[in-house]
Structure formats: structure tokens, C-alpha cells
Image (cartoon, rainbow, N blue to C red; front, side, top):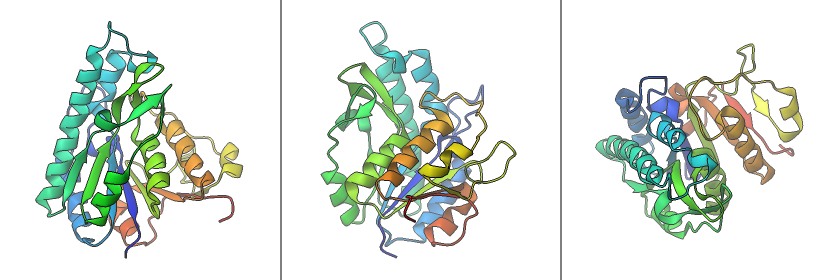
Length: 256
């Protein structure tokens, strides 16, 4: 199995994202994911993870998404420091299972314009993957030509990375079985032409990056470029990696 793969670990999967749980990492979940990934040592892989309770509270406190000036510039450090701490925990779990994981921090090399990444350079990531390294990148605060700084979500990174690196497979491990209708049923397939028929519930979690609506918008944009993605419960990571049925949602280009 040589297909280049992106695996996104949702913030609610690897952290306790409920009220009062800021800074709580789900270490057992990270270890289980790492054990699954270690079973596929030859898979060209890039991992993206959300910020969960390590980034959203700080970004909200300093109103990062409303723009950054000298008055709230402290939020850049506070937000980045929080997500970097989580990234370190993810890296440690992966490397403990023998995975050659390497941390990648968007603040260090990405720039946005009015909330959208511009002119990203991913040649170094391409070479890492070719060497069998596993870049681990995360939602982060980045400098912004219009706003001063902004939050770039893991979901926006997925779209840009998948397109820029020519990835073959995109999987999103979440804390739910897939995209859920209001009645709790799983939407098995989603296309741009059918998206208007789906009504999804609202998350009660703090999320400054758009929640499920923002996630689906990015995945539909990815499908517009001919790249399919899959959303599933974290317990189905091994099924996704093995190319088996995971019971989740597939976001597909129109022609598929």
C-alpha cells in the first residue's frame, strides 16, 4: 500500500474539549492511534491534528479571528505555545511506537491573507514523506497580511496540503461516526450537489475555526479539485488505513 495519505486527528479526539478541561490530553487515544499507524511502516503519511482544548480557548480569549494589533499581540504567543505543547505530545506518542514523526509548526512558515493561506511552500514536506518521515502539522496562528494574524484550522491545512502535495487519500478521525444528520444518522456519501439536502447539528464545543460547517466546506472544496476524503470514528483508523469499510462518510467529487 503505497498511496500517499493524510490522516487528520480531530481536536476532540486527542484532547478533552469540553468546558473546564483545557489542557487535558487523551494519552490513551494517542497511544492507540500510534500503535495502529505503526502497522503500516511503508505508507507515505502526513498527519494533521486539531488544536482542541489547547488552542481554541486562547484564540477566543484574545479575539485572534477579529484581527491582531499591538493591543492583543500577546495572543499570538499564547495560542501558538498551547498548540505546540499538544503537537509535542502527539510527536512523543508516535515516536514511542517507532514512527519517524517530525513536528511542523505553521506559524514558522505559513502566511495568510484575510484568513486564507497564500503561496504555501511544501517542497520540504514532500521530501520528508519521500524519505519515510511523517510530518505532523497542526492548526495554528499564522501571520496575516490583512488581519495581522489569524487562525488557520487543520481542515484548511488538509485542503491545501492534499492539493499541493498530490495526496491520494484523506481521512479524518473524529469523535463521531461521520457526518451526522440532526436525527443522528450517518450521511454515507456527500457531494457538492447534495450538500444542501443535509441538516447537521451544532456542536457545543468552543471552536473559532467554523466547527463542522467549516470542516465540510473545506472538504467540499477538496472534492471540487477531484480529491475524495473520508470521515469516520477514531476507532476505525485501522479500517481506513487498510482500505476497509469504516461506516463513516465519504465526501466525493461529482463524477464519482
